Length: 530
Image (cartoon, rainbow, N blue to C red; front, side):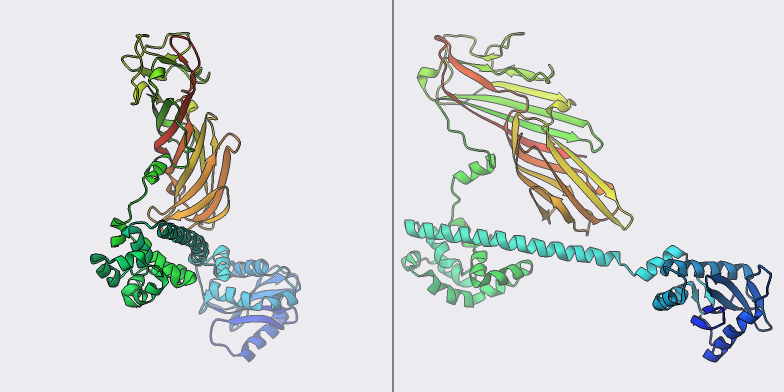
């Protein structure tokens, strides 16, 4: 088939819009359209007219006609099918089929006509494809816009974090200078601007004048003019942040980069390691009788619900610092009613076993003996392995929903299931599709992108019985729901998942209550939703 032209005209033969697909003059097409109404037969239902040169295939369109002008050798059935597609496109683009609405959308209509017929031949295309071409929406462009917005938000957060870090470093430097610290501290004070060959040369031969450094600002200028900027040029990802913070930020940022001699001369304070082990757990003041309870959790939740496996291990250590309190016994609180007999206990060989149907007591088999003084003793251990969801402290529900536009809406929520524990420093990591970045619409807590694992890290500082649930919603490019698993969870908790808790400590001989302290914590070895 060869379509010479596609037109919309009035009943008098005046062209409203017309698109010629073969070489035809304007006078020729106007002549053909003007003669068309005179050729329409009356009293018939035919939608095609043939003349000596061309064939008209037409369809009424309210007060107008939409018609194709073809050669006589074209396939009439294909011509009618093409005409119907033209009519559907007009109805889709125009709210009504009047002359004013047609002229208002003339550019879009002519563009659609070109998508249907090319050089007189019908293209293999349907209405949905024509609509997509006219919308000219690019999925890649949307992804790039989302990436740009997220990078801008990340840069702002990183700027705040860097500014706070630099302020803390300056305060630490001032504190060390005021305390008259050793040369390692004053090396930081006088050499923070010299992350270059100059500080390394001075480090190999330190002098007392550099240690005193009463005016560090006077030393920064020459060091900054050295090769410091050369090294700084390598940190392209942080250049915008450094420019925003100014020269002072650049100098302090160089100080924080590993690999400088200052690292070996600036020992970390001892309490830092202890804090990292405990996270944000509140400190416990140890009494003369101090009990330390630790539990270790390893579990895998299934995304549809239920457990793959769960393992809980715990131990109780008793430390007595006063020899007068060596002969004591520990009464444990009654276990929760929801826990079954699968939880297995194991006592120290010198500690008596639990008696069935009686209170659980931790005491030496020989009442005349006393516990060791000045050293911890593991008096009790317990273990559970199974699929009882009672021991799950935090439930995670991750629900990805693919959309028709090539993106995926992800809803994830958590809820505290065990009120006997309080969770601190909770981090929920959701994997992301390669090359895609999320747009977060709502969230509790804080979130950040982890570039090393290409995941979204959702951070909640505290989950307790008073604030036990939260949710996060985001959209990201990709339509594979399985990409967002496994979801990894990390936290430290205060309390005991198994409900092992000391109710009282009393003397063996007199039964007098003894003041004691208890430090109960839970650590996660593996916590995942697969």
